Length: 196
Image (cartoon, rainbow, N blue to C red; front, side):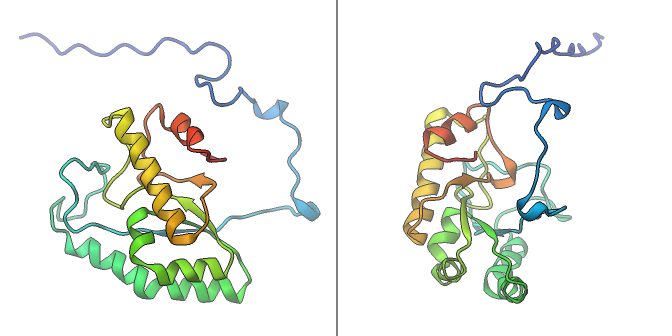
C-alpha cells in the first residue's frame, strides 16, 4: 500500500507583495495615521442586508463550512426565516439605535435584497448610508470554480441591481461570505469600484 504524497510547501515569495494591486508596505515604513480632529479611535458600522433563496440555482456555490447544526439542505426554511426576520423586524431596531446616536452606516446589499426590499433601500437613502455591492444572494458566493465570464456577469448584474434600486452606483464591494477568486480584485476594478 502506497502512502499518500504529502504536498510540498510553496516556494518562498520574492520580496514585496504577491499581487499586482498594491505595493508592499511594511508597518514601520508607513506614514503615521491620524484621524480627523486627532481622534484616538475610529470605527465603521456595516449592515448586511441579504436575501436567502429557498431554492438556489443548482450551480450556486456556498462556503461548505457554513452549515447549520442540522446540515445543509434545501429548502432551508430556518435560515430563510432568520433572514426574513432581520429584514422585516430586526433592522428597524438597529436603525433606531443608529439614529439615536447619529451614526451613519455602510450597507452591503445583495441584488435580490435590493429588488425585494425597496422600503429598506429608501430608509438607507434617507439616512445617506453608503451602499456596498454584495453579490447576488446569501446562497451564492464568488469562487475560483466560476469561469471569468460567469464571475464578471455576477459582479455586473449585482451592481446593476443595486444601482437600479438605490439610484446610486456603489463605490465598493464586500463579497458574499468574503468569497472571491484570484481575478476578483481586477474584475471589480474593471467594474469601476474604488475599494475592492
